[in-house]
Image 1 (cartoon, one colour):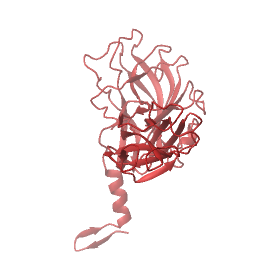
Image 2 (cartoon, one colour):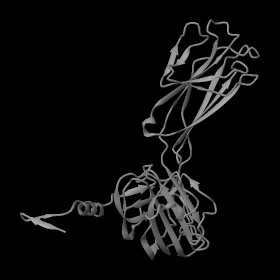
Image 3 (cartoon, rainbow, N blue to C red):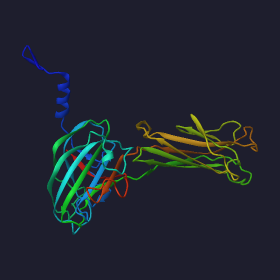
Image 4 (cartoon, rainbow, N blue to C red):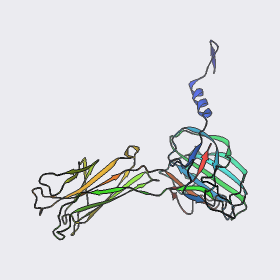
Length: 359
């Protein structure tokens, strides 16, 4: 109940919070949110949403990089920025738009299961929209976004989970003609690696070649994982190498060691036993956190070497280093040729998303 005091209207706190939530307007957000695509062309296309042979299509996308609380009131597409498509005529489509909250990491090929109930909301009731002529590309990509399809009911997204949106196209006229929408595909990104220094001779079967360490690194954008693979060659036969970890490159001549110390170690992890010619491989996957971006990770392999002529009976490899990059964006999608399909027949398209603007 409201109360008057000295001419002021006192409103209970819960009512104030609810009013602020509803009233908060939406900024214009371009998805996938992990890439700056507002003024940049996506690197892929989507033809079938308004051009499927059946005239129907079901498409769903999850975006894990949107964290600002806001209210969405419409959704807009744009044409792909390149190439002429002679059959991309104007068309009419009957569609419905659904939004809700979900989880990027738990995203599945089952449409309804990807919404965390009861957040699934039909934000645009089934309606007809007219789509323009897309035969000719823009003079300069990216294309301008089409006018937004207005929502029947605004959708409040609080930013605490991942955003799931879906568009169900019930009819398209004409059918079987491509309609090129801008899209973006993120692939695992190879990390930039640097090898430095030289290891020492350890394996008597190959006395002229030093012990070596090679590594590769990949950032899996859609899973927010970093994978590092290490390959040791010509280590002491049948020994268990240790992998040293540091945060900067070193060239420290350690007294009594057959080679330099190439990292200032903060951690050591065991590698599998080397075979008869001194080969061992090791793969490590770690979750990515934002504090990792731009950090340098350095490694060197060492192993006990009973035949080493230096006082310290340890053989060492060269050093390797890698700079960690942010795995963006976190986006996945699924699609089906009819709106009645409940499980996507082709599974999850990791890293793929249609470029849309939410108003």
